[in-house]
Image 1 (cartoon, rainbow, N blue to C red):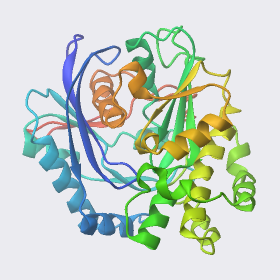
Image 2: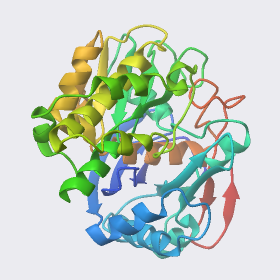
Image 3: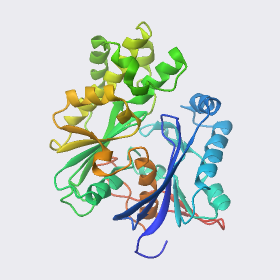
Length: 368
């Protein structure tokens, strides 16, 4: 896409929590955020969530899950007017960057034809093909957010989705790809093990308000076993698949509902504390986004485990429910304008590169 000025981009995200599709408008030139716009959310039904859950970990097939992803995105994205570009992440079903690669389902080209707007998609494949982890991808957007709210000292963004990830940002730098400007990696399990546990035990999607976890006590042996996993000692950048800690399901099988919820909530907190040890310096504050920030018990556990202020991103004027959707709008502009979307300190790729494919309504596809 030609030009250098800001454009309205519409980003969409369906995360590993499998709750639904977030969509949000952002006015960006690929470098700077000028304004945040309209947002929308389309929840998955229980039946849709079950199909998506069953497709996790698959490397081929999953036609029904793919149809759900495409239909849900088409429905929510059609609510918007004025978007000049769409960033479509799709749904990650499997992620093994050091093995089979990464798999996101959903056809961005079909969406472009359906909506009549150019769509940027397949953000992760090029990074993985070049030796990167392919995740996390929001860090360059987090850098722009730190600039947007006027950060003057290093800050960290913590996303508590199905898997946790953290981005450390030094706003003294001009560009996110500059060495020293960003460091990012997945922290460990966040909401996915807890949500799966509650779905099995009580048929509910999540621990609303942390009510159940507040009634229980974490199992210290399970926490010690978790922190003994080799992943936590690995130097970043590094990334995880949603089910890399699937053994936790069996570990909490013998616990009560309350103790199981408390243990899995604490797993997220101790993972974040371990991640903080890898940061270049302690951030001035830890800004939390994603569904986990709505869980006061998880937030309290994290605050008690780290040595800095822990606040939801709303305290700096950001929307924690829509930050990842906004990220893919911003990244779509970067892809369309030939700017890098990841680098050595965010995914471990050998050099800063731009990923993604641009599909136009007329059927042209341009790999970046």
